[in-house]
Image (cartoon, rainbow, N blue to C red; front, side):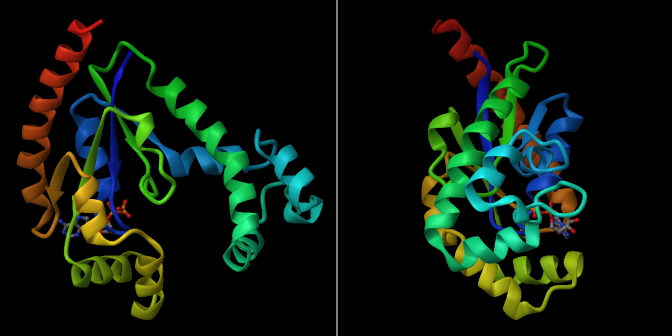
Length: 204
Ligand code: ADP
């Protein structure tokens, strides 16, 4: 059993940046958002069930999920959101477990932005949160995507609060400084995770 650590954090907190640093140390990273895209692109494994549940008009001309249309529907209708999640989440979970079930990495990172919102902590041995103050989060998302601050605030409000996220964390990376400050934090955690992973192997 691979020792699994969830990497989570709010929008623009720095999850991808942190994931790259771990990948640079040879650690396998499985990305829930990337898998979700694979499952819903033309020919994707989730499409037959999505078309059956929501109608073939949810697919666009290329045969992929019409993400904008789907987003609009689940935004208006919580039951539709639950139905979509009940299709996607088991498939994402299976793929994440398959991708990380490898002996080539001493432990694995599962990048799951909405880990806490979707209650998936049982999938992992430990939770790593990337944290920063909201004002910085807004500024970085604005610089990355050009979204309006109001839009970014609405997305932040739809995610768990910073306090709730920190309460669920086993480990925290502080990304309030510049990117050079990430490296030593990642290296310290990497050493700790190597120890935890080898201790967990000895338990079996
Ligand atoms: P997430 O994956 O959590 O959405 P990203 O890793 O994409 O976040 O980071 C959000 C944006 O902020 C990206 O454009 C990234 O390059 C930038 N960024 C990340 N960390 C820092 C930092 N410490 N200082 C400045 N910019 C950063």
